[in-house]
Length: 265
Image 1 (cartoon, rainbow, N blue to C red):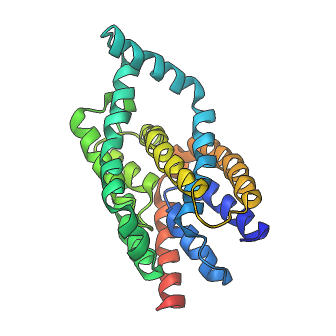
Image 2 (image 1 turned 120 degrees about the vertical axis):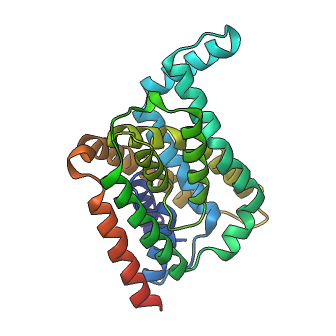
């Protein structure tokens, strides 16, 4: 992989990871459009470290409060809104970890076809638009029940299939359960932290133990660029999500799905 491909894919990852448009789908499609070789799931997971760093940096104060509250709930059985939210994030991560552990290799081998990405983009784009249109949008992320956690967590597991969008499907589930746009988006971002950390670290471990030589220069550059672009994306999305809503993302997903079918069918 040359530096240009790494730079482009890193910026694509940073922007699309937090927008509800499927970063994994874009990481499959961009190389196809430019005629580049598929960079592989290992590189995709490596640059997730960049977007993971972005979300941790952006929510550093909130995450610190949640971590302290969670430790207090374990060591002193203290309960607070932050400790409850921390548990909600941890329990909500379990489904994607279980499904990823069991089916990661199968998904990598069989679910990276452009036409499948198009189907996922279109179907879950429509679901996103419907959830935004008909959801009550009256609750914040601190109000999630354990039923809500189970629903959103299982929805996140669906995002292992490229084209679904992790942020898109979790925001869709949260909106359908009555969370506001801002709350659904914040909870989706917080939910990304533990799962992305486990997946990215595992793939990086695989890369360091790979039998073939790895050129680390483009990988490290890509991680840095993904972090910068991801941080900016989070900032602007949370700032404007109440005004713009989810309709632009639904339209974009449908148009992109149509383009994929036109090019690859």
